[in-house]
Image 1 (tube, rainbow, N blue to C red):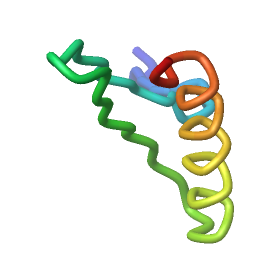
Image 2: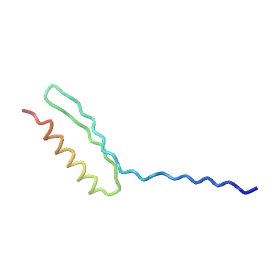
Image 3: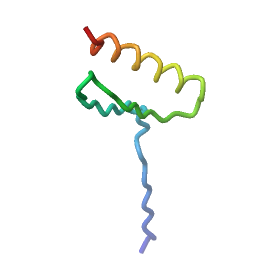
Length: 60
């Protein structure tokens, strides 16, 4: 009888951006969560998401 071998493989997935958006009495507030290996890249993604949120939910 041959021995059994089990091989586990996980698919590589891209990091997800998570946003928690709250409606406050004087506008919106948000929390952005993003994980990555490259610190500069993480900062750039967060800046980009923050800019997009400011544009969408800017106070009038």
